[in-house]
Image (spheres, one colour):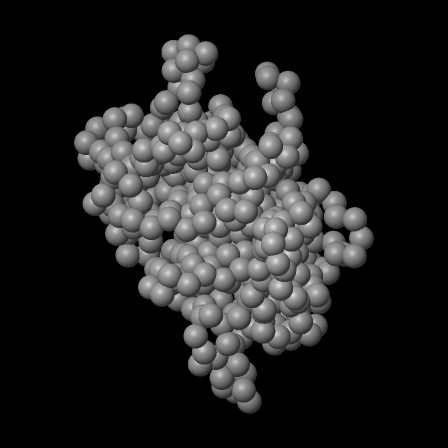
Length: 451
């Protein structure tokens, strides 16, 4: 896996995206979500400061037809501001929890962004011409004295420097009592859903003042609460199907044709627990932090604290594949619980052909698993090992015993450096990795295998 960015662009990504990397990282600069659009030409990141930065892929160079286009900054805008709920005396953070692109319908692009409470629909347009020669306005846009207008002229469009305009089209507020953890655009391109800890709402993209509650797991008595919703997603092809995951490690597939309120699931995917492995941490580490349908719609990918699992929609009893992300941490669960790392929510991603899966780990490591060859690799996103066009070397973590030259001991892992957010280009082997306040973009070397 090499890097598609030139020297300057890499420096820009690492230094300028969210403040200077060599200084202490501000909380507001930490990247909180990464998302490619449906063509992969645009890449959006959101951060804890409520900002959205959009990168655009430059066209391939004619001089180097085999070189991939670089991603450069296309637009930056403030999506959310900090708010205060006076009724509940609660501060609402501006942190962007999720970004989802809408399929492109015309020359403009659209995306949804959400913080804990409010979802916003943004429209991104380009303008490279400006009208000149108004009859009733002067060049500054002020109305002329009509008595001075003695002749009519035809306004003309004059070329200007390209300007990217981002405008808020809709604001979907007051739909959630609890914190929004997921948004997902439906394949009908007209509706989307948003999920919080206890409820999932269905919205129409054109209607902001009401939503339909399609899942409600809130018990009559909150003391009876045993699980919360952790993630949800629509099926990529069937607009009536969606899945949501829970903190108990289960997945529920729901069909909106069955009833308006989908509290009764169509299918429950749950792996029976091995009693011999039962411990104080079992319930915490089995909580599913992310769920993603495969592009084909046949499989689901889930991430819990130690593993990623692939589920077949036709088999509910157990996953068809289980991959250990960092099994060497089993002996460290006590200290990870004490420093709250055990509650970290890692995301997972499919490649375009559903043959390779990716997820993050600690020490700025991220893992890839090839479903066909069953090979896996650990790679590191760091400034030291990510020089432009360099090939990333596989990393290994050793647990006791003999250490090879480049091996890293479990005890020397840095748990403050964590890859929680990753994204994979929809068709090509290009990946985006968010490491604290740095965005790394890596790509497969031309004419070479993934590993």
